[in-house]
Image (cartoon, rainbow, N blue to C red; front, top):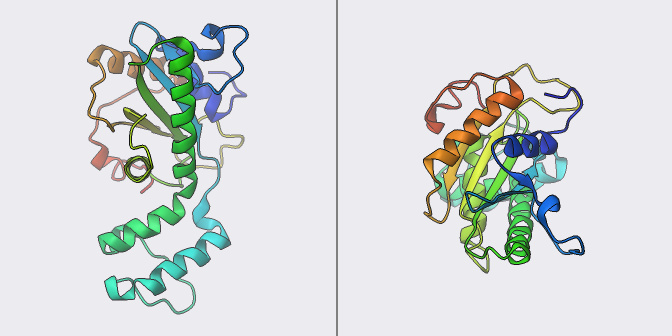
Length: 235
């Protein structure tokens, strides 16, 4: 893997190693509209890559909004907070946890909306209206965990004006591709989630998994996404 590469470029490179092509290389030369990142012609899959670069949990404005969520939902079981304290979403009643996650994950929701537009425009430009639309989301460790991002993506789709346009999400947590290797974590975690219920071919999934190992030199192992935190991933 190249020494100087950001996470977005890392993921794009690995997808191309798995049989994809950069969309700009296959679009008409005069095309000027929105576009996704990678197209898999033989698999009828289009992928858009999004990266989460900042930890909104440490943003003072987000902390203030989260405090307001707690105050408004004490009757639903939210804790009464005096001063500063750490509250884990897993320890909150489900309705309160969901409201809190929407505050922390507002960036994810915006990226989902943007990705849907890019994927739709690319399908139209390439003339493949039935292509499988895959959102690939990459995040550093110590931020929002794989399962939480997947929930936020599904929640954003479900509550959008048009709850279609995404078929699946590949969520990647990795320290690779960061400008500084400040994280002590060295492992990467890749979780594939269905949104529309439409399946991806096993051959495509296997090829993608092999491509990650080829590009990053990381040895893969299969694990249930529910076990990611136990194995060292972020919550």
